[in-house]
Amino acid sequence: MSRFRKQKSEDRSQESEDRNLSSVFRPLSSALARIIPVALAIVGVVSLYLWLNRDAAAQLTLRLPIPSNLPQTSSDEGDAEEIRGQLLQFGGAAADLPGAWPRFRGANFDAVSNDRVGLARSWSPEGPAVLWSIDVGEGYAGAAILAGRVYVLDYDRPQQADVIRCLSLEDGKDIWRYSYPVRIKRNHGMSRTVPAVTEKYVVTLGPKCHVTCLDSVTGQFRWMLDLVKDFKAKVPDWYAGQCPLIDGDKAIIAVGGDTLMMAVDCETGEIVWKSPNPRGWVMTHSSVIPTEFTGRRMYVYCASGAVVGVSAEDGSILWENTEWKIRVANVTTPVVAGDGLIFLSGGYNAGSMMLQLTRENGTISAQPVFRLKSEVFGSEQHAPIFYEGHIYGIRPDKQLVCLDLNGRVVWTSTSTHHFGPRGLGPYMIADGLIYILNDSGVLTLAEATPTGYVQRASAKVLEGPEAWGPMAIAGRRLIVRDFNRMICLDVSH
Image 1 (spheres, rainbow, N blue to C red):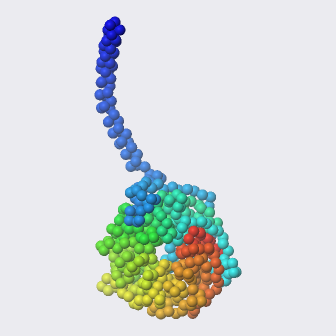
Image 2 (cartoon, rainbow, N blue to C red; image 1 turned 180 degrees about the vertical axis):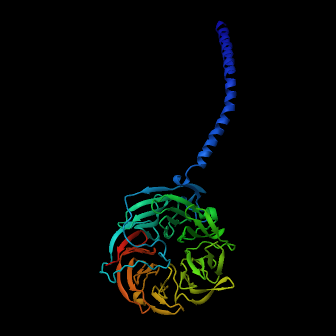
């Protein structure tokens, strides 16, 4: 009994002590309940202020989605991911070497070099000397060259990232790399576009339609646009193949989706103008080419449903021709072939067509002058070259062909000199010579003349396969690539 009364007494004592503690902490709890929300609100406001005032370019971050219009794989899962760009510096340095090839098809968009240098007209059996070589990710992305630097859009499979590489023209060493994560699968190569470069900017278009602008010297981030997320573009089959254009201080991009084409201020990333796209044409692999006609500057583009001319001033559609469309893949870029002449060619039995622009009562129209069947002339992948009044290109039977501006075949290289096995390799002209690379990495040198096919030299310079990437030349240095290797050749002797 005594132990029970003692326990009850202790219990009453403990209850009294608990009531006393409760009376002490109840006001404190009430005060904390009022203070905590206020404190959290203050922290939130400060955080929002810091976020809004941070330097986005320094952070190099953008939230971009994984496009959902391509077949999904395990590496493509997820609706969105945080893209964080990374800039890395390396030991390479810009070379003190002449010459430039600052964009797809060179300075004048015609695949003809402007450099006034003498190039070798014959080689030893081993071919031109290899000055340097680098490994590259699977694909066909060619190089741009400016101020002793080489620019390449690459893909890093282990890191699952697009990589914009700046290399030394002297030795191929990396100067800097800017990369951002984009998960893509192998699909007949990955990267396949050529950067556009000026003294201030380099603009690239990645496989999944990310347009990126960097400082061309330092690699510092300026801006990025996701054409799929922001403009409802559709990633083309086999990924994007369009090479971006810089015209003055604006980047010109053919989008598809909710706008056919747009101009972007390279300094700020702001949209200057957008073209209407009422029929919902989608992006093709063809690139935009500038030209002028009767004093009006315009951009010519092969959209999915027509070839169009877009005003450089405000993005309005100046003309269109719906007779030119390719069912499977529109790859080849239009060729300006003189005043008001636009030469079109393509694969999949499209053949070729010459358009003549005319202007009447202020309205421009584009009418066909002639159309050729594919066996006469068609080019599935690389655009032909207009040079000194004639057109040169590889047709489906893998022969090099010279055409006049009336569509007549002047000469062919004949089946003795064909550029197979598929005839999809690149070609360009420098110093009156045409350089032709076949699918297997054999480089051929011939005279660019309408008098006949005159071959000067031939040598295997790459192992292959699929040596399809556009060539670039600066001075006496020629850059070519196959599926996974890029080399620089000395073509001066």
